[in-house]
Length: 384
Image (cartoon, rainbow, N blue to C red; front, side, top):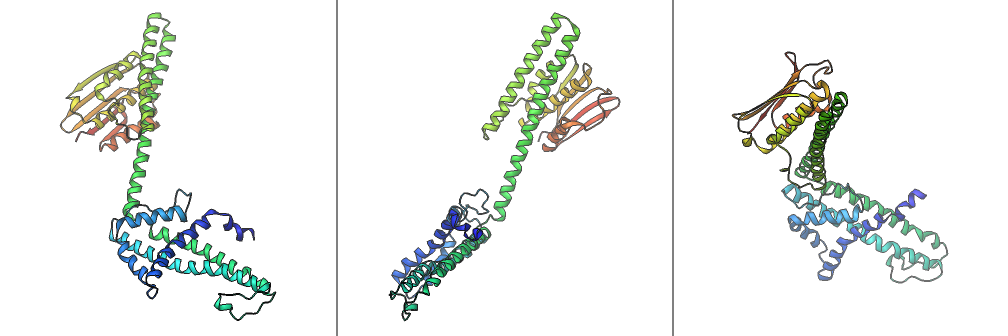
């Protein structure tokens, strides 16, 4: 019983009833004009459905009245863009009109019949109800009084559910809208992955440099070396704070430009940081870095940063050879260092996976792993 009466306590039941009544307002106005042709409003809906904005208006009404307060309604609020959308809108308008024709009389005659039964039960002769014009007063009509209300209640709830189902089917997203939503979701996931890689590369590099520098300073016991190590830690920390602020800014402002991100033109900062941490970096740059497109240069910077971070983290103070070459339509970036036992094999860790993902997103490729006694990271990125 409680389950049967539950819809009475939901506001959705009454907003759906209002949605069923709206078409009858149009019909009522037309009946005042020409009651002999009640089918005319249904015919007028056919050209109306061809207007693109009508689908948007119907979608807004359906969301507001049929699924109030819900986020995932399955109902589109975009205008029609194809003839298929217009055809679905036409079917929806005709179905809505038909549901209104059923709901209108029932919601009027249901309460009226209940009142009439009550009048007959208390000994009054009803007036104005042709169906019961010859009925005689009797107390037994009190038993029948709730039945029209129960029937009206069931019909209203059922028609509301049916209208919601039809709205999702006929006003739901089209194929083009579903594809656009899927592309938007994909872009959001890619952006989240990019931000995760940015944080991993930037903060991971800074922490690695700080740990290596602090450990070296403690082991050396040289005040002058300790001062240089603290300076390197401070500089790396400041750079990491700038990167962190920029990434957080991207999270706060989705449309914020990425022009502030470091590029390969800022590679000297990474090389000096690695040298200050004890690595013997031999760097060679060939070709004009300023001609490399922004996205390629920014991702190249992150690949170089992650490569140097891995060297410091796993190999320590070892000779590192960095080669950056811009030639033709490609950018080649190679980082090599002597292979140590601490690096157990290729492809370990999210950092190396991130390097390969960055290269793949740009249409290039990256190889990471042992090569002729060295550990190498070799990325080939197209510049066009």
